[in-house]
Structures are given as C-alpha cells and as structure tokens.
Length: 326
Ligand code: FPP
Ligand code: MG
Image (cartoon, rainbow, N blue to C red; front, top):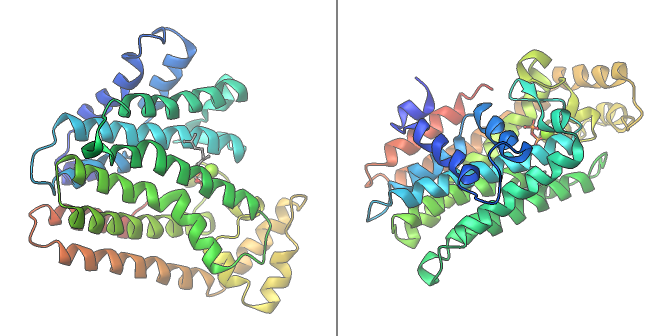
C-alpha cells in the first residue's frame, strides 16, 4: 500500500492545489515556459512526503483546518521542488525522479529563475494570512526556506573538508533536511489550532524523522546502484560530501589516508576504490545505528501523543521511514 493510501490522504487533491499555485497566478501566462516547467515538475512525481506531513499534523488540532492545511501542504512541496531545482544545478545532476533534471531542459539561467519564482510565490500566497494568530504560516514560507539555504551553504562550505566535526555534519543535515519536515508537521498542527505543546512535539518528531531520512540518503550513496539512485553511486564522495559513513570511516587511520586523497580531480577509479573500502568497513553499520536512534526518538514522541487518534498516522510515517526504499 502506498504511503498516502495508508494515511488516507487524497494525493490528487494535493496535486491540484500545487498546480493552482502557478495556474492561478494571473501574471504568468499559461503557455509560458515558466508555467509549463512548473507543471511538468509537479507531474514528474515524487512521494509528496512533506505535504503528507502537513496533513498528518493537521489531524492533531482542535478544529478541522480544511483548505488551510491543503494550501500549506502545497506550499511545502513548492519549497521542496524549488530547492531540488537549485540542488541539481549545484550538484551538476542530470537526472531527477528518473527523468531529466529541469536545468538540462531549460538551461541553468531559466531553471534558477523558475526555482526563485516558486520560492517567492509561496511567500506571496502565504503572506495573505496576516495577524498574530497566523504567524506560524511564516515558519514555513520564510524560516524553513532560510534554513534550507543555510544547510546547503554549510554543505558547500565543507566540501572536501575531512576535518568536519560530527556536530557540524548534524547541523548541516538538520538545516538541509530535517527542519523542513519538522516545520511541515508543526504548521499543519497549528493550522487546525492544536496546542503549542502538541505542535512542538510534532516538530521534534519530524526533526528526528528528517535526520534519519538524511542518514539513509547518505547510506544510499554507498549501497545502491546508479540505476536505482537515478544518479551515479558514489556521487556524494566524488563531490567531497563528508557524510556520516565517511565521518566514521575517517576514524580508521588507514582508511582515512585513502579518503583524504579524494579531491575534485580524482579519477572514477580512485573514488570507486575508496567507496568499496568504506563499504567493507563497519562505517555503514555505525551510521545505520544512528539513523535507528533517531527513529527510536521519534517513536518515543508517538507514545507521548498516544491520546490522540492521529498518533497511528505517526506510526505509519515511522514505519515508512524505517523501511524506506527510493
Ligand atoms: C537535496 O540534497 C537538497 C536539499 C535537501 C536542499 C537544497 C537546498 C537548496 C539548493 C537551497 C535553495 C532553496 C530554495 C528554496 C530556492 P542532496 O543533493 O543530498 O539529495 P539528492 O540526492 O536528492 O540530490
Ligand atoms: Mg543533489
């Protein structure tokens, strides 16, 4: 069963709302490259994890939030999709969701502007929710987006930095991945007038899930084939990303000497050699353990929310993240 089915969420409704973000913009002609590119991007699939998290969050409130949660869920996907457009340019990635990345079709300049438009359109739409009671909306449209950009900046700053600390790695992962997921659950909850306490618990739950998600993503670079990943295996290592498995492998002095030799001019053979050395070490198992620790933290929060019927949806999310295959 697909995740949205297990959560009893109508994905078509969410997809329509995401499309509305651009089709209802009267300043953007329907046949323009901008509108068509955004619509193609929406149609290219994706699991819609973040929108689903907003809707799940909204089930913890005291009032049904209806359209508001739907709009916030579309906003979350818009921010995420915009960040992936930019990410693929930064990573020089040609594939996304099994098809060509946007910048390979439109050129880099257009793709940058399309990403900027999407990010700004979210702010435009959500800024209509004014007043103190609705301030949480801006946690999604501005705070979470700023955190994403900061995380990406921190990642770039530490490329080929084999002295990056565990704290720096965790902070980068939190900013880049976990806090958007945390915010999705929190704003969903507040849109249906949950208590602050519940919204904050859901935030911590989403943060833990997001950390586990990022570590699993780091592991996939070592364990999956190019075909499954939709990008070359070992691509993080090649681009100098010191992910959690690499951090653990660096603790072994022999392995560290080989890893530290990888630079931007390394050959494919050198990268593949180090990839197989790390694969044979205990680094992957140790990273997996940390990912499991985060899932356990998340499970602890589900227990604290067990009085709410929607806690079973958190269990569904948890199971999905525990067995996630991309
Ligand atoms: C995927 O990383 C990328 C992110 C989680 C965030 C990227 C954020 C930006 C580029 C900042 C720009 C943001 C906006 C809103 C315009 P990955 O390369 O590890 O994952 P992948 O394998 O899916 O590419
Ligand atoms: Mg990338």
